[in-house]
Length: 318
Length: 154
Image 1 (cartoon, each protein chain N blue to C red):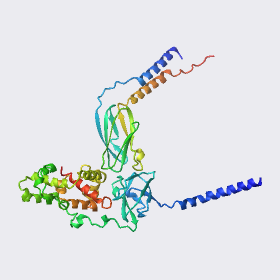
Image 2 (spheres, each protein chain N blue to C red):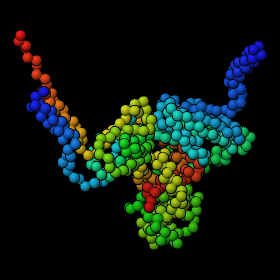
Image 3 (cartoon, rainbow over the protein chains, first blue to last red):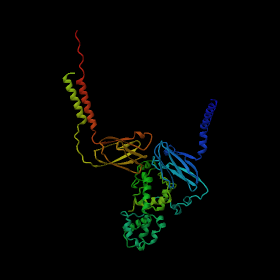
Image 4 (cartoon, chains in turn blue, cyan):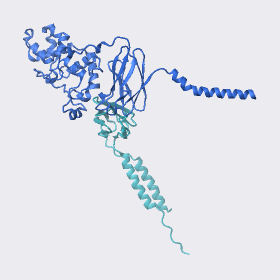
């Protein structure tokens, strides 16, 4: 009788001690740093926290949730797929970084007119070499282009230039026109003026010459690049610039009310044909324009910006 | 109850069954393709009432003008989600007659639960049937009500 009483006292004491010790044990076992991130519309504060610290080689665990509407989460210039962040639900994401630097994470679902302002930074420290994209200045700076001055085309075609028509005369075209450096630094209107005075092409009509311009643009892009550009445009640009590029997206009236001008209209040949690829890339990278155009530099990879640029020209060429 | 009243009661029951089950003269319409352009904003659809005929092939173009919205059609169990700038399309055959709610299925803000619309497939026959039943019930109450007890003379 006495033994059994002592045994039961012992059991109860040990049991109590285990229960009390559990939270402490759990805390010491759970060494992973889990960062809880709350998403709110930009008007109510955006991401919280806005800055996340991480280290190269160590996975970063994120628990994402929304405090108001549906948001999305993605990290700029990375291959991680975007995930949706829903109110009342937790989305768990694990990300790892190879290279130190400052990364931008952003909202991927249109959550309001200020959706693109929903951005945060991840500061990654480590000993590896930082990624090269941050070091190389973009082409528009190397070419010393002023992306804020108006760029009206000095010549515009009577009909939409047809690359297939240009391909017929492509044998006449000197190779120097097809170099990527030439394409990137010249606007279609400049190229048109160049081919117009080229003695090798003196026999061609105006529409043939514009066809050659379209051909030069087509030969500097790939079908895959155009598909990617189309996807990026629909996802990120169409809400303001319109699904058909007419500058009449669902937010265009709001932008006009705030900034006094409408988003760029890519169906206007005078404006788009006066801009070279490097100039358009500069506008995409930097943003601004006095209209609240987002800065996409930290979001898109270099290749994605070129894909987007080549897609923009499809509003003028066929 | 008198014999007369019994006959009337049976008449009322039969008339009620006719009202409920009688097939209405449905003007046969050939199924057509219908396209609706529905603009979704916090917290309404415009237009919010879509009227179609049974068998029609319906194509709803959902255009969101502020935040991400969805459109889920009750009973049909189909849905679509539209981001601003990305028109979404929902195509289906209206093979279930009746009146159905459609609602936003993406949390779009504080009043999200109240963002609803109506899909009306075919005429709303239950409105007419219910009106008929109400009139019949009123008649029956008036005629079948028990007569007041007569004063007893001792």
